[in-house]
Length: 373
Length: 188
Image 1 (cartoon, rainbow over the protein chains, first blue to last red):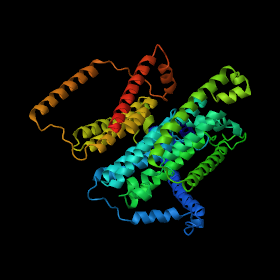
Image 2: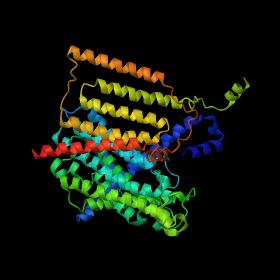
Image 3: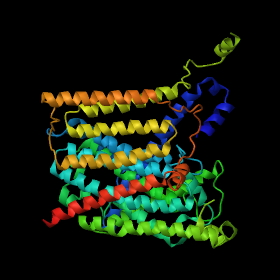
Image 4: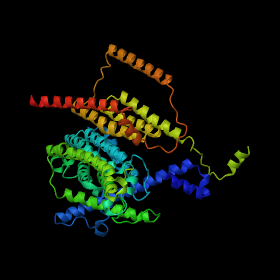
């Protein structure tokens, strides 16, 4: 982004009178605002999508009154929640109770700064992009445990404890299966990872051999679990815990938790699309790096994100909830060993491709070894 | 003198140029966050508040790492300390102490010993920090990718391979011990 700004300053007489640091600061604030608004609006529409899809699956209609097909339902819901009384329980720990939604919100939204929306369209092009997302989503856990503890309610504490146990456990298969892509890509930079998968559909990292294919499903399952989506929605299981860690929250603070949940869904759907499904690659060889063509790439990545979000919703309304011991069993005894096998297998695959199969000289070798130098 | 006049004639829109001191402003801001929240954590009457104060300290320190160009270390700090250690700490507090925990400072002897130990530690730290010559980077530019260098150092027998493996053995021993303790309690 800095290069682009420097170019802008060099070409504009008027901007040269303004201190460079001032322009950078303004630009950072503007870009973050744009991303925030984009993610919030999308989260609102995903809530609508969830309710419509759930309605269709249960042979009813769902919200269709506000706006065309009910598309503006989230605005009506937002106004309703804003108008509600903001109740803080008398026995709650006031400061932490008030701080918890903010922390959860930050954890869910901050990851978007390293997501590439199209070629070169990334707010912070960091060398450790993937690692940034994994570490920032772990902040959410702290916010949830704060909410659960500060509410001083048994439902909330139980929900928070389940949540923490589940999220900490599932972070491991999540990170290790993402490592499979890192072995192929040789970088943690998300825009580089997406750029490497351009071209035909077999260039997508999900199709580079059996280990990458398995890692995609492990990643998606672990993402579902760390997003506390059904069938892993034990932390807020309505039928046993009322609403889990946000039982005591009302009005706008509840809305923030709700928004953060759906934003985290979008973040992980985008991350899955960038890591495994070729980012903004449409599946055939077309150059999307031009100044205008990259916006087509944004639309393609958006399409893949919505598709993955639909799968998440579909899974939620299809599968019943797991029992807590089965959730832990699935993590520690199935997904974790499988993901380790995938990483080791992928390392062996890359090594064999580099040595036996001739590396970059043969098509098959270079396809199997990814972007290794 | 002519340079100054030249500068004054340019259209500056009246915005003070803080570009040069921006890193310093940020540094003092982050340092304030780190030190201030550490003090809040040390003085909090409730142990849970102390734990959450520690979170702000971790973020301040991570920001300082990031300002030094160590992006990987900065985010490791967040994922390990905030996402792991802090959560386990709070978890432990939740399962044990429910309300205000006393630090035992009401007794005069304990209090005196605490003051002496704290003062000694402070003195040692001041001498150690004052007696070290710190390498200073001269040009803050684009941060170099650090992950590759860290990875190579971990796998280099001449470098960090042996300390790294020793640390993993230590962690493995702790894991086995924890599993053993948990298992015995369940059988009893």
